[in-house]
Amino acid sequence: MNKKKVLHIIPAFELGGVQTGILYSIEKLNEIYDYKVLVIGKVDEEWVRGLPFPLKNYLITIGASFLLPGWVSGYKVVKQLKPDLIISSLWKSVGLSATFKFFNKNVVLCGFFHNASSPHLVSTLLSKLISFVQDAAIADSYATKMFLKKFYKIENADVVPYFFEFKLMKERKSFDPAYVKLAYFGRINKHKGADRSIKLCSLLKNYGVNFVFDIYGDGPVDLYSHIIKDAGLSGHVYLKEKLPLHLVGECMSDYDFILQLSDYEGMALSVVEAMNMALVPIVTPVGEMERYTKDMENALWLNKPFDDNLEKLAQKVKELIDTPELYYKLSLSASRTFQGHKKYTDTLVEVINKHLRS
Image 1: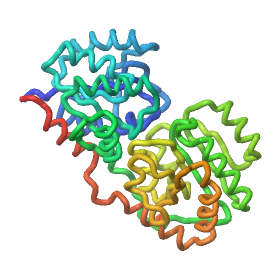
Image 2: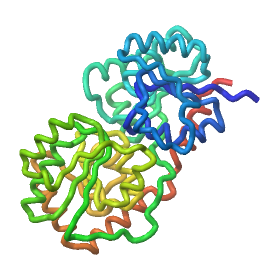
Image 3: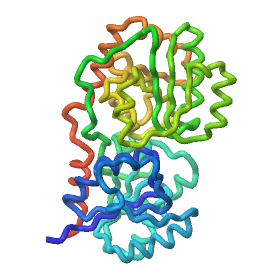
């Protein structure tokens, strides 16, 4: 029997939760479908190096530097591939996926939404566009599903949460309150809370906490190097290069906390992975993080209004550091948060099968 052709369209293959989810599921999905990923832009070879499988077998890369030529070239490729079902992730893919659906009614189009907010007007307009032509909507979390219902009037989106077979911390995590280690993994920008996290670090320093905060990711390094220096944190906060995906879990095991004070999120995959490694998340309760973390149970929350409550958060962090047994309790609770949850790949297969046409 010929496998059904499933094509997942994304703007670029680089550091990000969407791409991470694809990498964690691509082999298993190809056991069931002829599942390919069409990349409109380029592939970050450094980020994907060292994978235990040949990624090139599953990727089709346009390599476009600009969106419009990428959409045009991509349209020709999709036409040749003749997919049975298209999954379209992130707003930069909509110009291609929605246009192809408009002229090819028989293909099933599923818009995959990954954020419980709309970051800017162009994203809003293109997300609205795909909502008119798609056959089904997929949300990466219940928070995203509720946002789609409220903001785009999209009813009955299928939720495919980002739970994977992450490595689990099986032994009690060591913790030294005399030298605390925090980390962040992802894009470095204001919306992801980089500025806010640095301000929190200044407060922790003022409280006499001996700590290091390592930031692994992409972003305006020169700008944040100056912000860190001006804050007097050069001996505490370090900008590191992004890690290849296969090294992230191992690296996480060296830290005590994951610090991510975002303005908005969907699932926040790096936080999920860190919790499986028994790191205590210090987070803003936005997106799905509001559902799977609980303040002083398996996480520490920065409550709204975020920038006005950094002092209170610093006090909570200091109190937790000074009470190691409480830290161990939160760490253990974090590591057990996702036990028993259905995994991303299994749920996505159910959704694809639900919408595929026979």
